[in-house]
Image 1 (cartoon, rainbow, N blue to C red):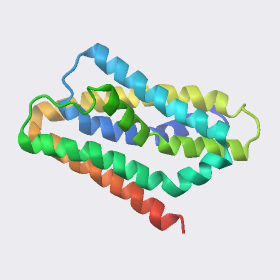
Image 2 (cartoon, rainbow, N blue to C red):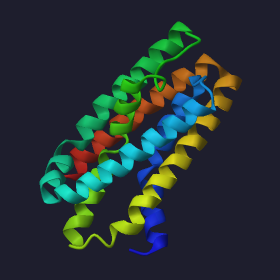
Image 3 (tube, helix red, strand yellow):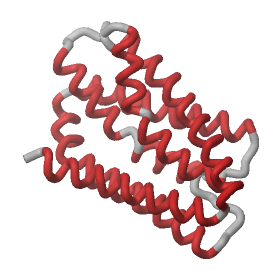
Image 4 (cartoon, one colour):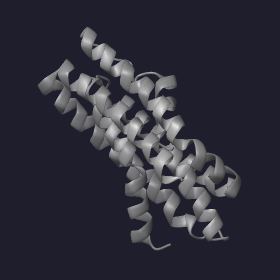
Length: 188
């Protein structure tokens, strides 16, 4: 895999991370240290799922292919639903990406496709050489997308308040529904 290909795959894998952090960033009030930890957590989870998928190969691929839409839907429904409810209630302090449990849930929801890509890569290329560029590319691009998402979401949150949080929750639910529909209708 060439560097440009690795970067393009990384950008496509982190699109969900960017969307989720953009939506969640509307209520993220923590400092730069928390933002750095959040970006690193997402990058580690995304890269870890890619690597785990590569090692597990076809075993994980068949499971991920069958259940990925449902898993992502349920996790994004949980996060998006809580964002929507808290936005309607008008809570100032949100905890979606402030707690370890929620970061892990969202990180997993946005990284399931990375496991599928890793499994597909292991089945199409028996050597680990193709992963040497892909792993660091996914790590860096994911971390950068989380930074951009949170900072962009903060701007939206300051400007539009709880309306942006409600919209963000609905968008996350819509992403989950879209993932589910894609898996249900494209796997047949």
